[in-house]
Image 1 (tube, one colour):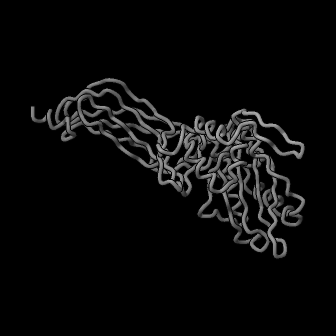
Image 2 (tube, helix red, strand yellow):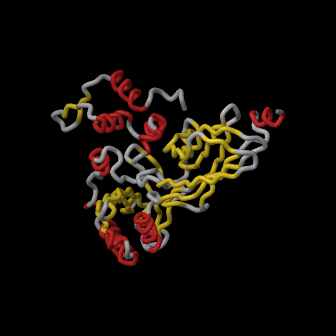
Image 3 (cartoon, helix red, strand yellow):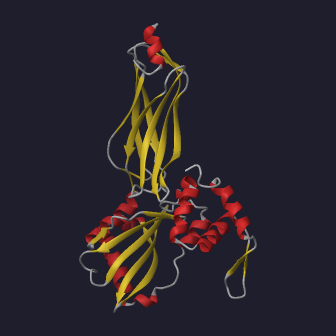
Length: 329
């Protein structure tokens, strides 16, 4: 009787342990492992076993946690004293998930729901890296002497942006480059911004191109092609100053569609929006999001846009979309 009483408070109760290979995983890769349930001092009834995949984001408001997915593993069952049960586990990481960088991190929270007792939990950190095709681009940039910045991987309403600085070939001509990616069946769409040095000024040049899978598979060819793009840009930076189109790609694909980091808004919602407002014009951001959601805007004679709703209406629109204010965070 005493053992049963103590087990209800966790002492001598069943425990749970998620086991998988401890290494970085690429976005789009499957994590395979198993969950070990170890029986305690008494027989106990288990209501359910599930693994939650969680995202942690450090924001100006503090650290927030959001559930990416829940993987149910088993329903009701009993575990005998000292009995061991093993349950297979597999989870495929979404390709458009923001990868682990600076403010973004991930963990698995394995939850064992015990009837009439204290539920048991096991937490395991997971590092999510960019997918294999993007890794090829990063390695090719490394061949050209580019190094990823410590604050690379910033997230906004369009996805995730990666920043690199030159250390060799382009060190005297380029301050930094910034890249965004969209994964497609036959390759990767790339948006490249190059901060070129032009006398005492800096010119922000923009390039867009598609890299076929055959090119991505040959990193020597890939590095040579990227070098050509960069050289063309540096030699004539004013020829590449048209606005980037990644925001239109994002809208066309409803925020998913392979944009690296494209799931960010769906997961972080109002937390992400609040942080973005610090770095972007509020009116511009609200217009962008309104267009994504299908709210109408009238084009003015000057080529700009006039919002049909008032400021108060805009606020209620986005409160509904992002789940209200920031009180929950």
